[in-house]
Length: 144
Image (cartoon, rainbow, N blue to C red; front, side, top):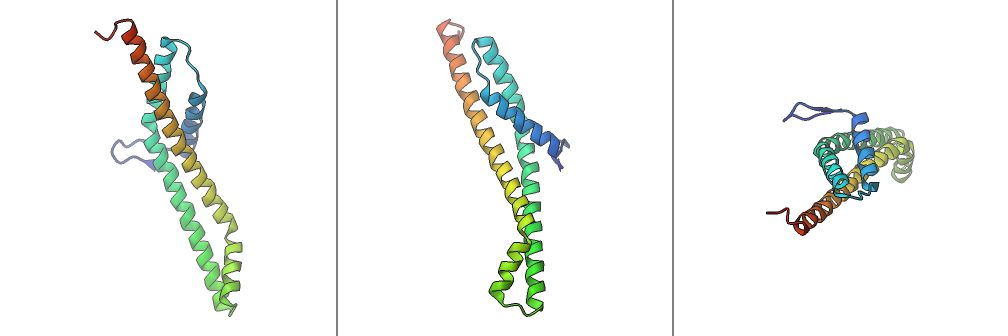
């Protein structure tokens, strides 16, 4: 859970996941007329306003998972070191013991990168829709 200090809004993991899934669905949306284009632009911009909080929430979980992995690995390394296990073997055993934490960390990292990619793709699509919308408006002389 992440609380935005500027606005006081709370972003939960569930809300972050829902926002990213909605963004992925919007990427598949293909408007066929100016009205649908306006709807798409409004919905996407509204969603993009939530994305900074989503990214911060995911990033918080990412660093939490990284700290858990490092703590587990170092704890196991110290354990094997105290028991006079050779250093190379101790590192290998510590890595093996910390596999669950490493996998959790990598999963959250992948989620973060997916969210960042979705945000970039949405921004690109909105900008292209705005350009198309401007071209349509200019064609009909609506820009005056």
